[in-house]
Image (cartoon, helix red, strand yellow):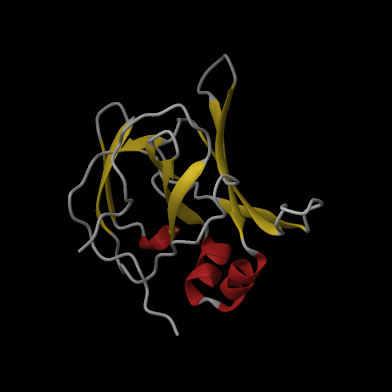
Length: 180
């Protein structure tokens, strides 16, 4: 058993995404929200081997949340941008879990550099009906001597609530998949 997301929930003034776990929406398992919908707890995934922990390029991934609307329920736009080495991104093309995520959408567990732990693509109101969907991929060659090439994966979902804070959990099912 291991923690879903590593690291303590210490808040620090730093931007970016430090770690992400992606799973197909149908694999989200038992997600329980508090009464306000602002915090959640994940008891486990239906199949713990159907999770991806993409190796992120340090300091280049981000999570953005934009809220619009003043009358009625707000519209909250969630955008997760993952920066990967092009070779790591290419390896995901033939991965069955990545294929399921492309087809049905994803739930993402996100740990930001500032220490926030979020559940994105799943909400108390919609469950997994509004998962993150792949918007597109971009390749950037870099333009400087120390500017490395990147593949950016952009995932998006729309909901009526901000991403729920993931409660601290000591042990969780193994979320790594043994792959050749």
